[in-house]
Length: 316
Ligand SMILES: C[S@@+](CC[C@H](N)C(=O)[O-])C[C@H]1O[C@@H](n2cnc3c(N)ncnc32)[C@H](O)[C@@H]1O
Image: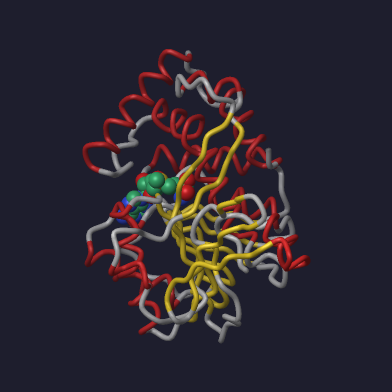
């Protein structure tokens, strides 16, 4: 587990008002019901629900944002982060795991209970980073500063369409280098993401991932949708709250990484779990011209060796 996520989970148990596992389970049920009926977390209005989000949901959203940030981490080390719809600070935690030298992190969140939690958490971590916690509505505030990295972690789906474009514009204008958007991996969220993608391309953004091109998404005219999956380990308490039996969960997600600068798109994206058959591997790829299936046979030696290690979501 990433060190800062572990510290956050420890913090919820040791520093926050301690809730019995029954109370957290009940709050988790309320949260899940809220997701099912409205697809939103806007009803996180009390400390028990924050504890439930942190214990049951944050490990998965953290794993997703970590997977996405890894894709830009090789040649990029931001000094400033703007975390919009920050919730308990999931994105900021993941960014700090990758870039401990981050100088400033601005977390914008409208729910006071979420903001209180993230402030307490980051104060307790004693890091060199300067944190700014703004209790604001992302649809209704103006930004004058620019940030190396701007993120919208699981928040776009909580806004109506006009609000989405309003926030996307603000987020893009405030970005110096990269804008990263994460969403649940459902067909509905994929559609939202495609509207965001078109909007940001029109604004002059360059797609870094997952798309290897700025053309129309080839999946838009199919029954399929672009999404990926990350496996995360469940701790004992995580398993208990979710009443799960497995020691892991697979979190499906969709995402978009936009750069302000021209991007290298000289790759293909693995769109599904590679199919391994005796003597050959089938790769479903997204390329500039659309989608294609590539068959890699054992006789292709080095290519086959690479293909046997490749995973759903990787660049090829
Ligand atoms: C699903 S949570 C995601 C939290 C965190 N970014 C993550 O990835 O785990 C969405 C967060 O966005 C916040 N949010 C929703 N609408 C908002 C708005 N208009 N202004 C500010 N925050 C908002 C919610 O309160 C919630 O904390």
